[in-house]
Amino acid sequence: MSATTIRAPRGTLDLLGPAAAAHERVRARAAALFASAGYEQVETPIFEATELFVRGVGEATDIVEKEMYTFEDGSGRSLTLRPEGTAPVCRAYIEHGMHKRPAPVKLWYWGPFFRYERAQSGRYRQFFQVGAEAFGSADPALDAELIALLVSLAQELDVRGVTLRIASLGTSESRAAYREELRAFLRAHETELAPEVRARIDANPLRAFDAKDARTAAVMARAPLLLDRLSAADAEHFAAVRELLGEAHIAFEIDPRLVRGLDYYTRTVFELSSSELGAQSGVGGGGRYDRLIEQLGGPPTPAIGFAAGIERLLLASSAQPAAAALAPALYIAFGAGEPQGAERTRAFALWQEALAAGIAAQIELCGRSLKRALAHADRLGAPYVAILTGQQLALRDMRAGEQRQCSVRELLAAISGGER
RNA sequence: GUGGGCGUAGCUCAGCUGGUAGAGCUCCUGGUUGUGGUCCAGGCGGUCGGGGGUUCGAGUCCCCUCGCUCACCCCA
Image (cartoon, rainbow, N blue to C red; front, side):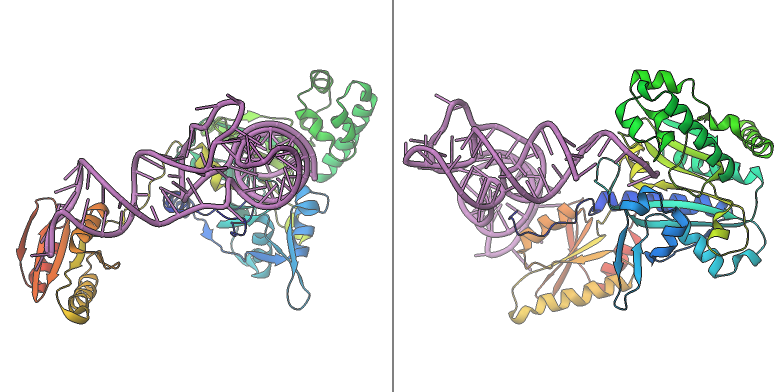
């Protein structure tokens, strides 16, 4: 590969045969699962007004601060390749007046997303997500439903080493108050903290819980927890979600340190991870966002959703990818005994007739000799080969190694009837 | 943005203390003047990621750079 060869942009991937089939399999399983639960598919644009993500995802998030693919179109509008799916689906919900529909409005989506990050295992600049969003109800049963769907999706796809963690963030007010309390706690113990934790006290104090440093961990074991600062109503909501999951025998852990990175979450948050993955172990996650629709200009509407990464589902899945079977039922070869490719012309007509008759057929397209054409047909796995030589037509049974002269009609009938 | 590892044929890789690039697989052709699988023979295919330096001589040593990859940050 020479230096001037153009490659796929960093962090992007060509999905060849088996990989493309694997993606399609995930999409099909997800589509069936969501349909069975009454979710309607939505396809929103790949790019949106930049403002949607700034307002929806949150100005202070990593996504908005440094990960967006933002560009201006011909008339100077600022557009952004979608970095996540919730804000666009919310925009569509508002734009199409879906709050007038009977609640809850349940939607699912699938497609590529874009974030400008350094790629690593399970993380790409263009990645695929499947997700679901449900609007119009604050009932804990809806929380439990979304969590159950994410778990089912992982099960459907044979994802190994799965752990479900849940938590509640409460309202944004109680979270803000808690964050201040935690900052004060961290400052009081500043000398015992690892330098990188100390540097993040203002920006992201909650990350201190993840520090691997032993002294920091000892401090954090005594730190106040957000779960203990929940309002009575939020605590009751969280308890109801836990009870529903328990009754449904969905295994989960309560993780008081689970804090999803996007600003819009309220109350229930959850994440499904897999031990089969590398550093990026999250397979999917989501949470409730009861204020987002309002923030985006819609009527006050409670809502909850989740997204799962296709690449990560696949990495953690035990199912082996297999390419789609492309073996033709009929391969059409021909001799070269007549001038101006007359045999090829008849072969081409036969190919068209075969396709019209519903037979998966391929024709020799590289001018191979009959010997090489048969070798090629064999490699493709074609059970039958039609051989045109002069005015003669023969049908060869590749498995039996026998062939006989026949008419076009007989040939098509033999293959249509003799299929597995 | 930062750090580690790795860049030799389409793929998987070998290449010794520096001596002027190989194998297997794939693909194409012939052996079989019109017939597949096995076998045999031949062929296509590399600015050894790129640039500079040291040297009589660099795939090999040094520097820079680009790319891939894993990890940090953060997330799907």
